Image 1: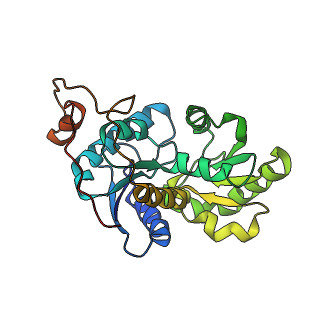
Image 2: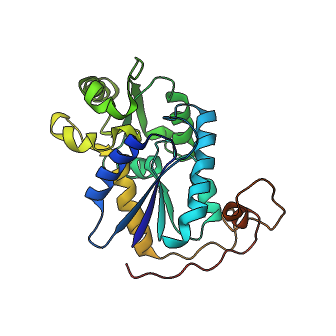
Image 3: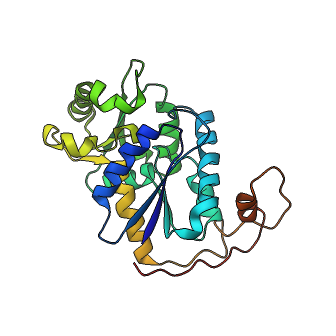
Amino acid sequence: MKLLVINPNISRDVTSLIESEARRSARPGTELSMATASFGVAYIETRAEAQIGGYASMQIAAEHYMQHDAVIVAAFGDPGLPALREILPIPVTGMTEAALVSACQQGNRFSIIAISQRIQSWYRETIASYGFSDRLASIRALDEPLAHIGRVQQDQGDRLIALAERAVADDGADVLILAGAPLAGLARSVSDRLPVPALDGVTCAMHQAQAMVDLAANTPRRGSFAPPPSKGCQGLSESLSSLVGRQHLPPHPIREV
């Protein structure tokens, strides 16, 4: 199978972190295509930035989905994920949704360890939209400016571990989610230093994307995720307007997986 992994922000060094962790979770025979947004912000913290990242994700997916079996939105908060599910005829998953589902399979309550205080409101809203607010023990986040988004793990690793330990001791977390693409791979490298399971969103999304391809579920023809109704479009790329402005999507070729 072939997976399209989209980084919805412009940080190519973060894309490299995502790719390194994604390749550790790829099965034999699974191919990865990495894509970085050509416009937007260095990393996403706010609702406005998430909207921009979602549009970037939609543009990349529209251009490349036909060569792939599934799409992964590789940013915590999953910018653009519901819209992509609505317009694409292949499975789509994201770091947040995949990590939340995985966390709830390993414990009753989870905590999010995040890279900035500002990011918390958007994360809480995303978690609520997936129906997991009652399982959230806490969100604990760094409280100082980031010198370089691609070096958060090296620069702030000990502080992130301290936040994780407090989430377990003070908030009652059964599972930890080390959130955000800049932390890709950190859960794997520090798991032996933490008292409860620690999850990486990239790893969870990779495993779930591959499983979704295996499930081979039908593309919706009715309901809220059916293809959008046909209508005129203006100012969109040809590839994106063909998805959002046309009622029937072209059939996706069946691949051996």
